[in-house]
Length: 335
Image 1 (tube, rainbow, N blue to C red):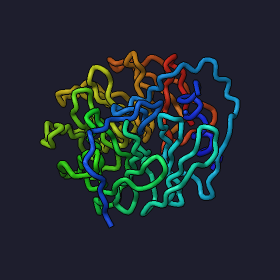
Image 2: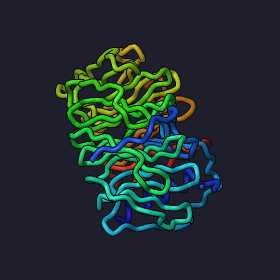
Image 3: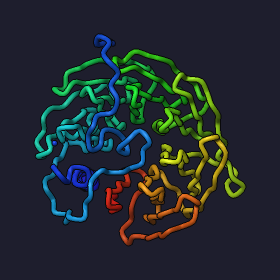
Image 4: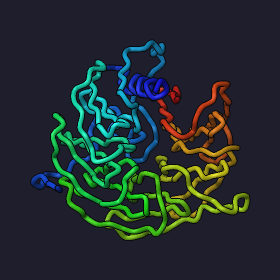
């Protein structure tokens, strides 16, 4: 519980350091990501982990703490007005004001592991264990619900054109419009427990146990990439992909390997990071990749695969939860 509270505090401090039965709604104009400090998992559709704020002035003083009775199961997102949205172990979605005061809760159909995503027309979208993709209004009322049917554990990702991408554990990617209607679905034939990422060209990337799939915005498959390397006979992708400004796709595999893939689906390089990593790699605005492994070692890797630096921390750091957040002045915050 203490770790979860600290995680919420640190992410909020970095991002807000300058502070704010199936039903469908009528079709509305497409809504892209909200113009907020942290509107979805890893901050953006490319999952770079970049915050728009400088944090050199932040001294680490606790501003507030909010505790749920059973703890939290997702990472937070932040709306344009500073409201923080986070899933609880009690199957509730929490809306917490920027002052730490609870605004409302919504009871979902199952656990909420997914980080909520927020659209620019103020919908809060999240996935839940009962198989629902739910969109709420700012007051916590239901805007629409789309029922996938299978368990949903990963975070939704919102494209600039308003398309909402979600995937279930069996490897099916769903594209929904901003009113919660299905546009298309694509089965990738591989189990996945990672969220989709979207390139600057609109290509959707989905990492599953044994492949990385690149899918066009119309739902047709562009290519698949096999992550296997000679040093690891049974290679599985462990993390959600992240995408740099030049289109390179990064992810980590079991056994402790960071892999870089070119936009055409060819391997760029792979790097030994010495232990399993289950946290999505973050990317600085200069292209340097920041990744941490299960032993608590933080790596900075240049775009060419060479190591800039690494640091191992004395305190044990779990690689199973949390995000690595990079401020605009390249401060790094993680739990």
